Amino acid sequence: MSAARHWQSDPDPESPIARLPSAEGERPAAQLLGEELRRHRESLGYTLAAAARAIRGSTSKLSRLERGESPAKARDVYDLADFYRLSRKDMAYLEQLLAQAANAEWYERFADVTPHFLKRLIRMEGRAEEITIFENQVVPGLLQTARYAEALVRMMQANAFSEAEIVRTVALRKARQIILDQEYPRITVLLDQTVLDRKRGDADVMCEQMDYLLVAADKPKVNVRIVSKDALCPPTAITYLQFPDGVPGDLAYLENIEGATYATRQRSLDNYRKVLSDVRNGALGLKESIAAIQKAADYWGKKAPRER
Image (cartoon, rainbow, N blue to C red; front, side):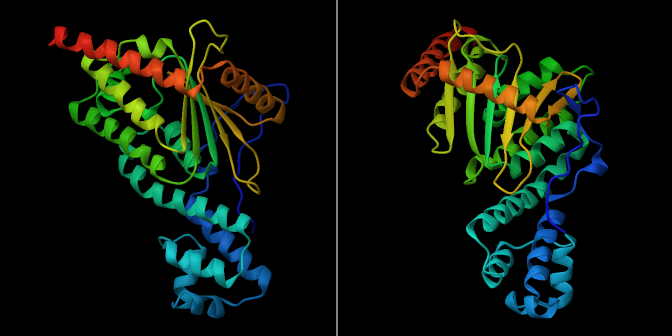
């Protein structure tokens, strides 16, 4: 069976937005990885025993790997890919699934403080090749400091969280940034300039967050661009996930206070992609963006001592 993401179609053919599918409709990356390995083995005509020898294991070990029942070791996946003589394109997809299967282990530890829509977003982020984010209210979660994230959690909670729940929610947001240290996905953040001025927490929190943005912007895989206050931009945040060749369908993700929706129809995706392209084209250049963040860091840095 070919490994693929199983998204729900838009229920209304005229509606560009679909509600997130149920948890049962999403397939774990470990299972997708196993199915993809099995598909390659069967298409080449290898038995379980023959392929198991390539990873120095038993047929039962390979069978569990193909069913997604045991953690996949990177060495085994690479050895099987070499044995199957997979193309670079096929290998790239396996690497995406391998990385996401590893990611799944950590975020399941935060299941008690993770809403379903965020679990699904984390799964999808790990499978993506490129992520483009436009934000007009806050620094995106992938680039938040712990204290900035805590300020947002305390501000946005509808019901009072215990201190333990706040700590775990912030820890989840920081752990999610594991993908910043992976080769993929590449990340472009289009940040409305007003976010640099909008106070979350105290001035010291803001200064620390601006400094972290400067560090993140220096990463080769992260592209941070500031959108001027005078530029035209959409009224809501948009996250667009692009997946490797061979993985069907891109995804536009829109989050709100009570949950999230996503767009999957081609007409809708074309629209969101154009909107983000227009925003990117109207954003400040790299040097100007860095200068704007540095200016904000200096402003909050000067204000912080007066608030202590």
